[in-house]
Image (tube, rainbow, N blue to C red):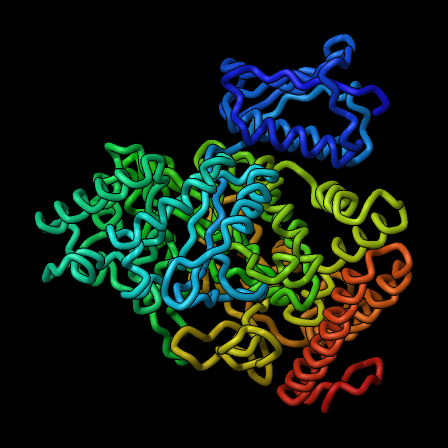
Length: 630
């Protein structure tokens, strides 16, 4: 952009938007872009007729107008403008109006007060240290800017697995420091929420019970919530995990999930707060010999019958799949299934089962599949976003590592989450190219190479770990590396039931009946091996190893082939990355190269362990004569 400009901002435009506009344009075009005596102007103003949080970018003769529905809309418009300009689009060719699909776009941190992060792979917490809130306000400010730049507007700073120690964040002893943190995020349009311990009335309040229908419990939550709002007037609400993995909850007290959620909702309602009530509720311990218990069915079985019993300011937070953020699983049948209850879709940015930010893995590809999956009545899941599903949340992948996410390429997942939370119709390819260009510059070879690695990574990882919807064959403690029967005989387990003749779980109407939780047209496809998507075949069906797939391969040979292919593709990532060495920042090149080398070793281990496991189970050799045992 050759011509200098002057910035004209109306009085109702927030300071953060003005600051980001000035700094961003100066980074792109140099500090001389701004001149008070310039003939052309870039104006910022509020237009309340726009959709909530939306913005409009329009050329106006030799000037340019950026309008937002509110201060958040202005800020999002600024970041959208800078993204387009950073991609090389001329300012005066921009004409765009946009608004988010859902009102609340949330990032959930699983940070503990001792500074550790549950399922964190990028260092320590940026919020907590040694049992207290202890943070660098400059880094928090940068993080708030980062979140706002991709449209995230709510943050939960503490782990959903709230301990007795971390329950204290809602007390007056901790709230002044929490309020300071909320103030930093507020400046960038990000509201703060907290995970709370369902048994707080007993843990913090000294009551003898946390029973949600007890009058003292009801009064305790009301009083404690009032205290929070005195410190944080725009407090977003509570995130709750209850009755799951040995955590207390209403079910343990003979109450329904609705009764449990509503007591908190009624305390928040006068202040406009929301309860985000997680549906990861499955205290259904399994005996491996019992073929009737099917844990993925738990959320639907518990919550569907309660439709209409939750207060309006309760949002049920549903994981994308019925298992637990596996490499491949179907969408949860609970998503969109409750016509009288608000829902949130929960994703996982941190790579718990998808490579732990050691192995490269594009979640954008997986999320595009999730949003594109059928949801009944001829619609896709993305069609429910903003309707039955009015919120989206995801588990964060950041820590105090210098590059935020440990693996440089894992930054693409945080970027993609924000972009797809705003617009679930976006394509993974387009988002990935955006990120690559913004991160490494517009050199075509770099953009193409980085994009190729990321777009292939999801399928490569699936090949050398658990294809066909198997899932779970991981080490139990850290969830990284192969352990074919690590979960199989545990209280949470029985996920593939492999024996010498067959593998998989029959979840059809003749098995556990799980397929019947889906709308009829979806259930019909899942219910038959011939129509079931191949990538989900062993999630829904138990099949013999000689079952013929559509490509003519036996099931077992396909498993062998995929593991060999996946390991070779991981090797190919290194070759491709090496070809870009002279075009990349040296530190980024070296950092990613180290992790790609670790990924290759992981891929080879998966290949050898899983292929050996099936060879020993079946005694059937690889038809191509490759060595498949250790």
